[in-house]
Amino acid sequence: MPPSTLFTLEALDAGEGDCLILHYGSSGAPRQLLIDGGPPATYQRTLRPRLQEIGERLGQLPLELSHVLVTHLDSDHIGGVLGLARQMGEPDCPGQCDSFWLNTFNEELLARLPAPARAARAQAQGGDLAAVRASVGEGLALDDELVRLHALRNGGAGVLVADGAPLALALAPGQFDAALICPDLPHLHALAAEWKSKTDGGAAGLADYLDQSVYNLSSLVIVVRASDPMHGAASMLLTGDARGDHILAGLAHAGLLDDDASAVFDLLKVPHHGSDRNLNAQFFRTVQARHYVISANGRHSNPSVETLQWIAQGARDPHYRVWLTNDNNPLKPELAGNIAAAVEAVPGLAGHLHARAAGARSVLIDLFAPVHY
Image 1 (cartoon, rainbow, N blue to C red):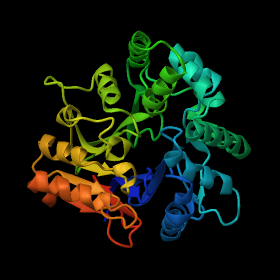
Image 2 (cartoon, rainbow, N blue to C red; image 1 turned 90 degrees about the horizontal axis):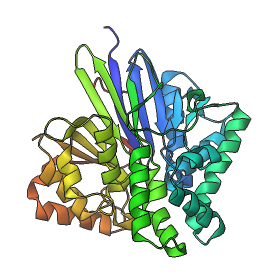
Image 3 (cartoon, rainbow, N blue to C red; image 1 turned 180 degrees about the vertical axis):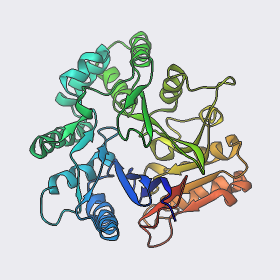
Image 4 (cartoon, helix red, strand yellow; image 1 turned 90 degrees about the vertical axis):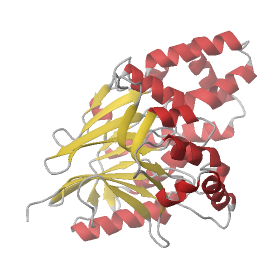
């Protein structure tokens, strides 16, 4: 039997964070690309054993990851990657990689950002925003590890930004196409102008800009497309923690909205763990999918009741599915409560929910042939 094409997104249980593996290539020669690593504890708890399992089943230890991509610097995305990178080169490390893709707030990136972003970053480094400073520190620590590993960064290019058009990323030429649509510089500068018109530029205004824009706006948003003679074409929209309005602006500038101003993907990684704080009903009316993937565990009340309702009310595909890395958490009872409240409000949602099985490390969404390892 000839090898089958793979195009699968695996969402590992990363607690409140994101940890994704994109499986591609063929069943005879499968490849893996890691996207984010969840918070620091995710590496030992989930990511490390899963990489070990894949490597053992494929007879390849350490498992060679084609690339590691970090969408942005929040600790619940970069922490597990830093744990993996620190162990690379040790005899018991289950994974190896020499190609990383990420933005850190270095001078090259700052030079391309509008003035409020630069000022807000300085405020974070010298102010009292401890969580932001910790994330910046993790980004700098990962930079140090990449130097130690002699790893290639961003394919040898500089910062990862779109400039009013999609930026092609050479992640797997000939196997899938990847295009960066956010951060998008024209939208960044438009937001900066709007911010400047609404604030006096004081410390409180800078902190607000930082919390609401700079870090989540810096999330890499990528459209990934693959094709297969048997299954046809398939696409994923991978969003990190980007705000919904930023994603829509990026899609528009990339020319990815159709004549009725909507975009259809086979899979949408729902932004920011299903939070209603940076999404709205219009986003889910505009961005359509067959599969909606939410990585959350109830922390910060994610996924929110409203987001689950918006998905159910906006989805046009009658067979859509919502994949959850967690549907209950004894430490966060609001998780099950939010899901129950959304089902009560939109009863039809119940038949579309699919949660990670008890004891499983992840959910796998196969767009082509299934992953069996």
